[in-house]
Image 1 (spheres, rainbow, N blue to C red):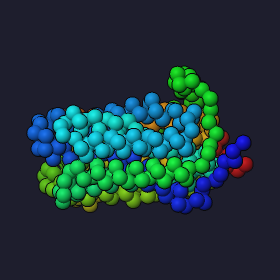
Image 2 (image 1 turned 60 degrees about the vertical axis):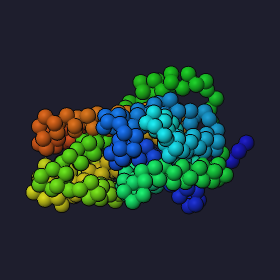
Image 3 (image 1 turned 90 degrees about the horizontal axis):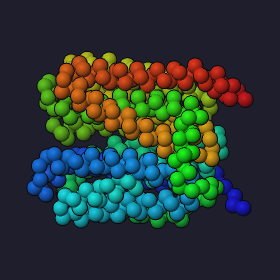
Length: 400
């Protein structure tokens, strides 16, 4: 029998895991600010270059659905470093790309295997005491969210200063180093014996039987969809009148979201103490109020910055509380639960991006704000349903 260790006091390992989450998740966003450079380098049209971003997101979604559930049956000490190594190979292909199809292949490989972060997070919950789950998940989520926010800024900066391929070279080296270190450091955890196809049957069963999983997944999807309305319109809105901001300054505005990302570990700590419902409510209120700031932001860029910071803080509150709750639903199915949750979460992001673009093209900033507000209301409605059905149960658990 293997004894499962508690990693909550192992600061070195937690930092390694947080770095791995940030790097693998962020690698999926490197191409976003590089589209113009990619277009010029390979002498292709804008639509072909933009397809790189779409392929990154599609392959990541595929990885969430097909690879993340394997975390429940695989030896995670080998599985996680292997996924990271394969993502590193994808980054190397991008760095060595001599034509656009080769870049697409590397991008898809990176996207598919960068879901290592979504295997690492449920794995972490299996190696800590129950009362530390929220704190550890929050810490890793902070690493992941900061990695995503910094990835676009760093790739754009390195492209302007040196070459657009440099971010891929540096990230590949880092990811190989982290994979090697994690292979040595990760502890043993129990795993289930189950055929691959049975995993998907069990996921369908989880969605039918666990109503709270659905509620929380829709809360997360609505919150990320609302935030994605902003991500999809930030460049066109801030580059136009009355702001006329350059691309580099627009990137600096998005860095304000780092403070929201860093709050995740503190939210997780309070969620462990039974305040998950309270912080979910606060997150919904922050999301809803951010759209009031966004609506009046044409009067001042500071209102937009305040709205962006508030929305990111609200999203961090909601997402941290959601993951704290879903990992407790069925302790033996954490990777499958996370796969379902994150698939719906990113489906929300895709929906929000599409709605944001449509609203901007057909009704300008007014329609954009209405779309974001409607999605925030959708998120809040399912949070209210969750509270009605499970709020008393959560209070009882807190007192016991």
